[in-house]
Length: 243
Figure 1: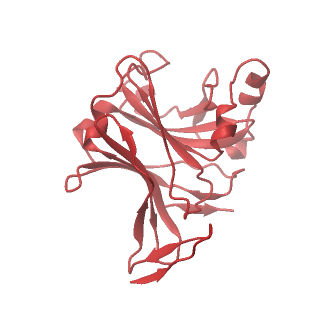
Figure 2: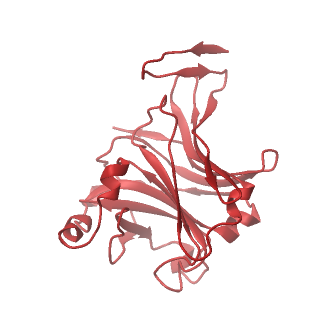
């Protein structure tokens, strides 16, 4: 093992032969915890980023009101465009009715800071900014925007080829989020029921041609339950640097 220890706000690496996983601080959730993580190669290149939930995190969640859990990667890591992550627990789902009104989690990976995100209202004068049409090159193929933006989030775009829009029940889907015509988050959305089944899942992703926030974007996302550690992993994989 080789180790590079640099303090005073600079980058820190502890490098192993085949890379290593770094976790952020654990946040209490349900009867367990959640934390962000990154898989880093021996040269410092990020392979994946994601969220890890202990099995108990899916239990004893709020039943009447949504829950919100904010997570960050360790401050020693700088993996653009990722700024912070928010897990939104939706005990009754949300609109559109008949599609996403099932208990589920919105796993938001934000590219903007928390102060900027919380200033988004998507109402009044901000509605026009929120729903400003992105350039075609900033949109992935087959994605369509929702009718309204969501406060403290932005404008959600969905792939109309997804099973839930083609006669099948919603289990998991992948969303792109915009504000002021720029991509500001990506979001795997997964039902609690699907996570409890502990099935392996992986999906290839459609990417826009251009990005405002340059950095590492996933080509696939996966859901996996590690029996040894009793943890659920929601992973953005095969990160590709977009310049």
